[in-house]
Image (cartoon, rainbow, N blue to C red; front, side):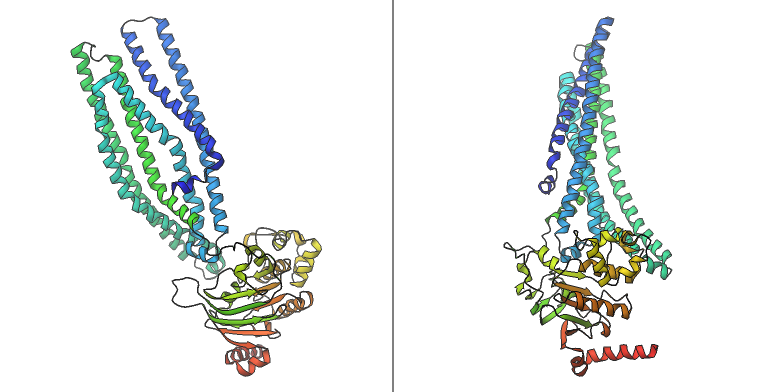
Length: 580
């Protein structure tokens, strides 16, 4: 895990190493100063003059200033290195997620990935900063202080080492109790973020059903659960401080008591006042360095679960892989489903699609009809290889989609999904997602084809109108038409509309389909719809039910021999007559 995370340090190795050098210098100077102070105390006791005091004081002042400067540089460099490490780690995590298929995203959930890129990385960043600064300084201070304490006090210094096993046992017990709680907290963070994400996305539904109070209570309960777990964990970790303080005060009292007796009995021959003062200072440094180690240990305990969650994302292998000799040219828009079976998860009990066999010629208009859960969306997602088939194969342009370069395939198979997404930026910015090099004339042509040009012209700023995140400042029908125009700008060989005209009226829907026939006759058009009127003019209509193809044919043929199609048609036409 450490090796995997260390790869993200990269260009910040230099500030990390420089930080270590300054920390070593700072630790050496801090450990030498008590030695000089002890010598000064003894000289004062022996009646030295002002010149000696000024000389010794000057040395101490220079050492203090150099130590302060080293500490400041170390602080600056550790902050730079840890922030850069977090930036690289976030970059690596985001780039890894971009390689994921929908199957990988489904495994983690979007809320969990957001938590890992934010909260978890912050914890790891703080741990790294403490490791390159405090985790080096504390052991050095401990070792230097032990050596200097033995030089100054001899066997009396052994007392500082005796307490270490007690402290180690206390630390291990604290970590053993706290670690499971921290694991639970991070899982609850994921659920809290999922609740927030769900609430924000469904804000219209929440307000439409006046469920604000219910959502507040649900959020409050999730937040309270996190508070309780964190309080429990922090309460356990807080035991660390009293344990160390008890050991420190016991040591100080013991050293002061025994040391004073030695000074009195030996008249300063065995131990003098300067040595005792240095011993006390080194004792404080030893125990403070141990307390720093305990703080690092606690921080690492907290961040260990975060690090594990980050590495879990970095180690996840994309479910879809690029072939070694990827084909980059798609011959045409022909599509063949050859005995295709598909399930979203290997652990799933049943297939989402069962034994699909279809042959769609290039340039055909195909309508797909069926009830909710019949497998319509699952079917078309296999064309652009958003998922891979479980069994069988899908061919585009005469080749298995698994032979194509993913970018080339998806660039040739343009999809407008059920959930239409617009991004914050102008209408032009959103349209250029389809083609970054598109001219204004091409954008206008695509929008006219998608029946979007007319309403865009009604906006005061036209194509420069700013779209809020998610397209919240345009209607559902307008959003759908802009997404269709964006897809058309790719000039794809295959255009897939996954129920993406559901929010527009039947007249506009008809105009869009007529535009397709006139302007992109060579493009294979696949239209998933709930309305028979959206697909009845199609060259091929596919009726699906329960993940299977129940019938294939033209409108008149299906009316005669497909009960499902006939029932849908009669329900919709009778409903239309009743409305009239």
